[in-house]
Image (tube, rainbow, N blue to C red; front, side, top):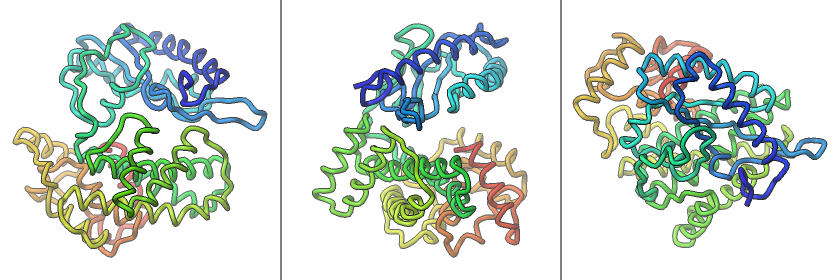
Length: 380
């Protein structure tokens, strides 16, 4: 096993080992860098299952983004937001040198770690990470939950985000994949969506595992008693292979993969939401109707959360579609309602696009896409 990848890649390890100190130095050199208590590498490279891309001359280089988490000690929200902006600007040069994005999550105070919620992001960080600056045990105060009991809403969020990536990739596909960057964007989002199909299936069955290999093994095991999971397990193996050893695809190869992958995602999405809502759902139009009308059984916000949601909705869209019940829901439910119609062109789409800020029934597809993407970037 490698330091940052499942297979051993000393050349790639050396590239990342050299890059991380430069990233830390750039972060600490920002005006608010002195407030940083710790920097932690998460994501694929933090879990040692990142991708090792072999370029045209045979050298290995990073393929996945660097997902970094920054922690401060007792800083105000304003101070942390300033640090966030400074870090985003400071990572431009390291990202250019590496050829990948270097992303810092929003700065968090260490005092909040004991109250970290049970989310996929935080638990995957807890399970697999590398401290690149600060105390080695900086995440010790974070609760460790049973991953097999992952909240179903985490699976719903995962499918929404990976499905949105698939929808964005469809735009590139429709434009003809005219550049290598467009083809690569489409390939990586296609395989991310496939991985989400398997991960969501495991979450829905209280069977999620901490590592990619363990999730693949669990899917195969479940498929012996649930034959309908066989296609998911087979596609998941291909996606896991791509994640570990990404390669270049031709537009023709993407064209062959696209529709079967989209159909797999369609079926996985419906299967998950049937379990999320604990009832039959005939198709995507019926799912949109259900999400619009009701919250899932396990997603009832507290009175305080409902009040906060009211404020978020008012700030986001104003009093243009005022409905007391809908304004008490977190804005992500707008995305849950609208999304199936975007990727799967359901017959109910025209009815629900008006939930998007500034959109009317006769708005152009381009306006709808822009409004959806803006809302998704804020509330995904």
